[in-house]
Image (cartoon, rainbow, N blue to C red; front, top):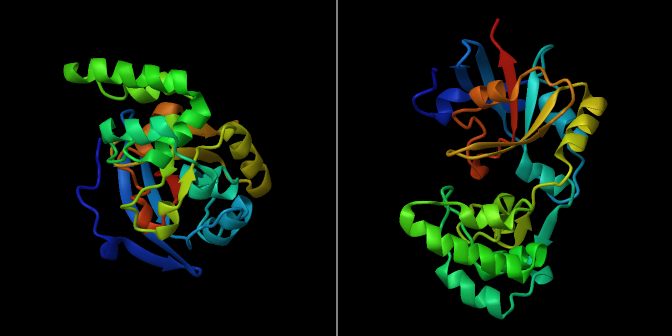
Length: 248
């Protein structure tokens, strides 16, 4: 499989029809199919913005027949108001105690923050969180990672925000939770725009596919191939939309 060896944003930067995007190049999948990927830059999307309107503003000017859209989960959470503010989360005894022992996960973000840990307790209940902590502590010396998130379940691994190292002050005061109905959201967006949509929670380590619209042209494995080098980049690039274009 072929991947762009490095990411030089200035070399990749393009402007077309009033839209700024980055040409992430062509990648080849395990089955030999090739895909061009275009990372489309947006403004900082705020809570409650309309996802279809965003697609029409930023994606439509670049869209060609046969293109598919990867929609970033963080922006979808903002649009659908799946967020929590610090004012809504009140760290209790266990959150203030346990966060000191939390590690940083493979994405560089973890539960080492009392507000985020309290949010998990609110979502999953204290007994499950305590069980997850114990299981994580027992398995970590054996090199097993991610047990905390697996035991908690309920999309806990997708919580983002309350992150003091974020490039955006907004994300220091806000937590984003992956929407619970990703397939429905993708189907609704396709119905409104006519563009096949997959909802992705991606980073430089993994590309977590949350859901895709009915009739999406690529298989799950092919989606992973097309997104294998995280063409979305990191959050400070403001490129939540990726146009995937099969190379004929």
